[in-house]
Amino acid sequence: MQKKPIGSTGLSVTPICFGGSGLGDMPETYGYSVSEERARETVRAVFDGPANLLDTSNNYGFGRSEERIGQVIRERGGLPQGFVLSTKLDRDMETRRFDAARARQSFEESTARLGLDRIPLLHLHDPEHARDLTEITKEGGALDELFKLKEEGLVDAVGLAMGRIDIMFPILRAYPFDALISHNRMTVLNRSAVEMFDYAHAQGIAILNAAPFAGGVLAKGSAVTQKVTYQDADQNALEPVRRIEELCAQHGVSPGAVALQFSMRQPSVTSTMLGVTKPERIAQTLEWASMEIPQALWDALDALPYETEDPEANRVYNPG
Image 1 (tube, rainbow, N blue to C red):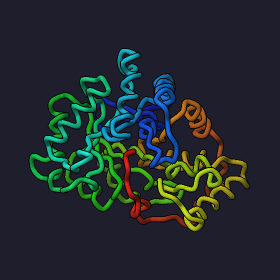
Image 2 (cartoon, rainbow, N blue to C red; image 1 turned 90 degrees about the vertical axis):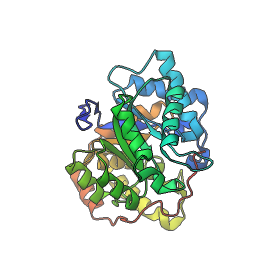
Image 3 (cartoon, rainbow, N blue to C red; image 1 turned 180 degrees about the horizontal axis):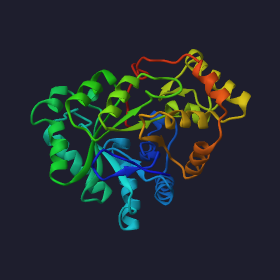
């Protein structure tokens, strides 16, 4: 896979990358558990595969995701050559404090779990869930601390990773980020990130478009999971998914392939980030990425209505 650069940082990433939130065992979010050994086997498969970025966070599974990834990094004696490990600064999960001191503490917790002295790509994560946004955005706040870590040579590239675009877009305009992660907001079902992605692309900010499967339903199917964007979905919420499934069935194409390639076709997207919790998903992802999809199906999908509002407006976030 041909790599694309992350700004002028010297890092470059493949058009497909993987997200490691589920590796931290988060059954309340995903509806299933992931054992420690299964998580490690998955990380090994990612490291051995063609994709060169794995993303995690300080708070995924209350640190379990980083711990499990760190176990494999240690057994391998470090990251594979040219591999980009991405993680995130997080608020204190009890007090929701997210000032500069907490940002530095979060970084130190992550490097300890991962067994790394420095992080290739570091994001500030979910400021919308902090107790006070001004702790993050004020002079000397958490965002300034993020850029300070880069200035100190402890980080190669810095980004912003969050959900709510009404908060994310103004922050993105105010700071010279190298990258961003947005999830569930540029999919076959939802296009609420279009304006922000166009701006970021014009500014040379690398866009990592996460969760193209709308939390998994477009990969697993509406008959298997009744969750859309990590939330329990009623029949009305599942109806747009079923329309896509019906069109795909008419053309003999997997909805997972359509969902993945929809993101990969976007000119603004640097890399599409997919959550992965078992090794066989990696091979399946590569198969979907190369599957031939007839233009007639794309035309039919383009004719379907899609959402432009926040798909997680009513979501109750839980890192467990």
